[in-house]
Length: 139
Image (cartoon, rainbow, N blue to C red; front, top):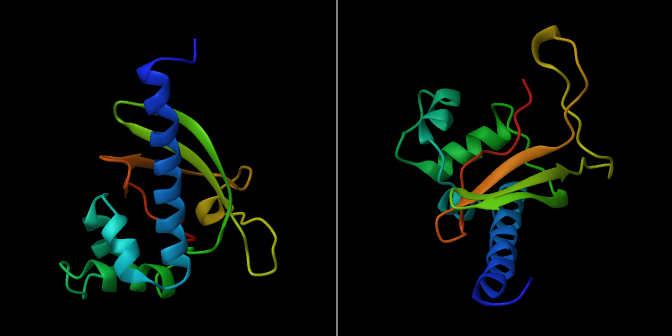
């Protein structure tokens, strides 16, 4: 157990996927919209729904609007934990840090009840460099 070709391939793939995820989220947090957009492999219609007047083909501009205008929470990464790895992608749980160093908490939307969310799930797909989800959103 833990040896052979499968063991040799799994760890670097997970490490590469984790690095890609951190790069993506850090680019968004630091306002490097081109880099964040280049790593996003999710549905761009989600971004255009936040900015209907923007050019739907200008993904970097849509990212900027998401993070700076419409409620996207693009903050520094706190902790990253592996949830699962499989043929459909590598899933991580991520926490984010507020400006004061505390952990980001997003409460239930629209007056709903429930515990605040502190961990957010991201899926890394393809060659381990593309991410399906946007950063968290605060309604």
